Amino acid sequence: MRPATLVRLALAGSRTDTARVVLTALSALLATLAGLAALTVLAIEKPAGDAWVESEQYRNALLREPGLRGGTAFALLMLMIPVLALGGQCARLGAPARDRRLAAIRLAGATPGQVTRLAVLETGMAALLGTLVGLGAYLVGREVLHRPDGQGRLALPTDVLPSPGAVAAVVLGLPVVAALATALMLRTVTMSPLGVSRKAARERGPGPWAGLLIGLGLASFLAVRPAAYQLKGRDELLGWLVPLLFAVGALAAMIGVVIGTGWISYHCGRLLRRHARQPAALLAAGRLMADPWAGSRTFAALLAALIFGGGAAAQRAYFATKDQLDREQNRLVGVDAGADPFYLSTMDLVDAAVAVAILIATGGLIVALVEGIVARRRAYAALVATGVPRATLSRSVAWQALAPAVPAILLALTVGAMLGRGLVGEVSTGVSSIEICDATAALCDDPATREQYTRIVYAPAIQRAVAVPLEQLAWLGAGALAAVLVTVGVGLLFLRASTALDELRMT
Image 1 (cartoon, one colour):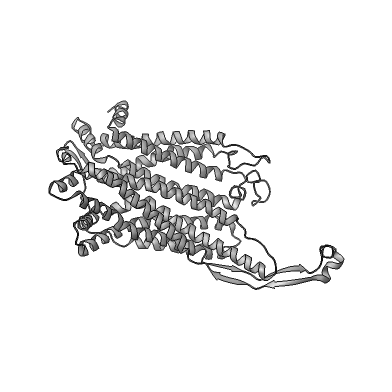
Image 2: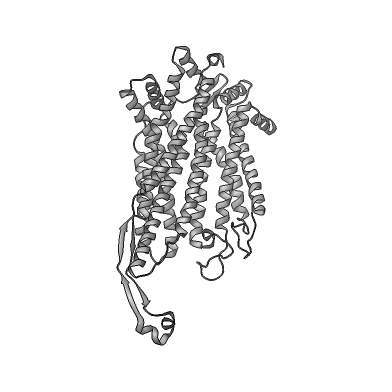
C-alpha cells in the first residue's frame, strides 16, 4: 500500500471519526501548551552570582525565586496527565464503527500489518496536528502576553524560550507516544475480513496487588525527609535522589490507585450481585464483573487529579499551621506581626490547577461513558425489545458509574493526603529571641541609651501536628462526585437514542 493511499484512508471516515480526530488533536494541543509552559519556567536563567539570587524581572514570586520554579513546572506537568487521559478516552470514540471500517479494508485486500499502521497513523496524525497548533498558539500567546509594567517586570516568563531540542521533544514526542499507545492497544485485536475480534477478557477478578504500588509510593515520600537529613551537605547526591523519590512515589501511588479501581469495580459488582434485589443493580453488577478494568480506564484522569488535590490540601494545611505558629510565637515575644500570605496564595494557584484538571477529567468521563453506551447500543436495544424498561437501563448505567466511583474517590483522596502528610506531618519552631526597647523612638535609636532600655524576650520551641484537612478533602470529593453525576446525566441523554429498536437491524 502506497504512503499516499495510507494517508487518504487514515483521513477517511464518518462524522464520528472526524469528532475523534478533532478531540484527539485538542487533547494534544492542551498537553503541548502545558508541557511548553513547564519548559519555559525551567528555562528561566539564573542571575550571575549566588545560585539562589532572585530574578527580579518577574512580578510573581513563583518565577522570581529559583527554589519555587521546580514545583511550578511540576504542577504544570501534572496538568498533562488528565489531558493525556482525555486523549486516550477520545481515541476510543466510535470504536465499533472504526472496527467495521477496518474489517472492510481487510476484505478489500489489505494485510493485518497495513490495517494496524492505518489505525496508528490516524492517531499519530491527529496528535501531530494538535501539537503543531499548540506550538503556534504558544508562540502567538508569548508575543501577546509580553506586557512589562511600569517597572519593567513581567507577569509571565515571556522573555525566555525553551531550547529547540526540548520544544521538538514535546511537539514530536507526543504524537509518537500516541501512536505507540495505539499500537499497544491493538496488540490483542485481530482484524479479519469477517470482522474485528478481541481476546477474551480474564475470567477471575483483579488481585489486590495494586496496594503494593500504593505502599511503595507512600514509602518513597516518607523517605524524602530522612534522606534529606542524612545527605545534608552532599548537594550533588541530594539533587537527584530527592526528585527521584518524588517521581517514583507519585507515579507508583497514581498507578496503584488507578489499577486498584479495577479491583474495587470487581468487588462492587460481587457485592451488588449478592445483596441487590432490583434488576438495575443486578445488570450493573454483571457489567462490573465482566469488565472491571472499565472503571480504571474511565476514572484514571479524575483519580490522578484527586491524588494531586489531596496532596495539595495536606500542603495547604501545613502552611496554615506554620503561619499560625509563627503568629503565636510573635505574640509571645510581644510582636504583632501579620500573616505571611505568600505560601497560602501560592496554594490558591495550585488549587486552581487542580480544579482545571478535574474539569478536563470530567470531559474524559463524558467521552468514556457516551462511548460505552454507543458501543453497547445493540445489547441495550435487545434488552428493551425483551421488555426491560428504559428507566431500568438508566438506573443500571447510574449504578455502574457510581458504585466504583465513590470508593475510588475516597481512596484517591486518602492516598493523596497521606502522600502530603508523609512530607509535612508536623510543624516545629525553635527557641527564638527578640530585643525589645521600652522607651521612646529617640532613646531607642540612640546607641548610647538604647542598651539600658533594651530587654531580650525568649519564646519557647513549639511543635504541633498538622491537622487533617477534612474540609478541603470533602470539597474535592464533592466536586468529583458532582462531575460523575453530570457525566451520568449526559450519558443518559444518549441512552434513549441508543435503545431504539432500529439498532437491532444495524450492522
